Every structure is written in C-alpha cells, then in structure tokens.
Image 1 (tube, one colour):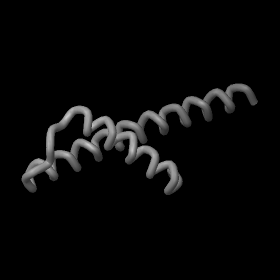
Image 2 (cartoon, rainbow, N blue to C red; image 1 turned 45 degrees about the horizontal axis):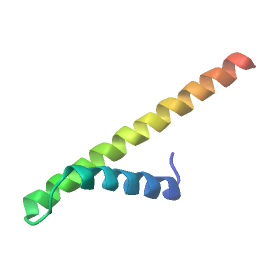
Image 3 (cartoon, helix red, strand yellow; image 1 turned 30 degrees about the vertical axis):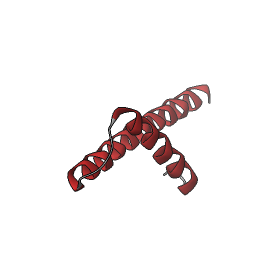
Image 4 (spheres, one colour; image 1 turned 120 degrees about the horizontal axis):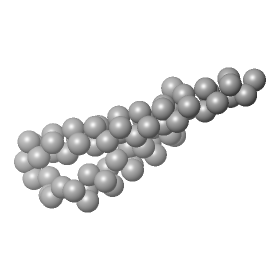
Length: 64
C-alpha cells in the first residue's frame, strides 16, 4: 500500500498532467470533470507502480 507521501506525489503529478490538458474550472461540472481526470491519472500511476513492484518481486523470487 502506498505511503501518504507517495500518494501526495502521485496526486501532484496527476494534477499537473490534467492542468496541461484542461481549461479553467468555472462551473461545478468542470470541477467534477477535473477531479475525475485527476483520479483516473492517479489510478493509472498507482497501477504502473504496482506492476513494477510485482515484476520486481517475481525477479527476486526467481533469483532466490
């Protein structure tokens, strides 16, 4: 499970990516879309980290 520090870093990176893609958040709908986009990117980043950890674990198991 990712630490709070790791989660904060992922959130920040996700927000940066979404800001580059989206325009101003003026309406509640635009704010909701922004948050959904951020959460989607966060989940994708967490999945990437999980896959890398699983691959590292498999390599370690094969080594030993």
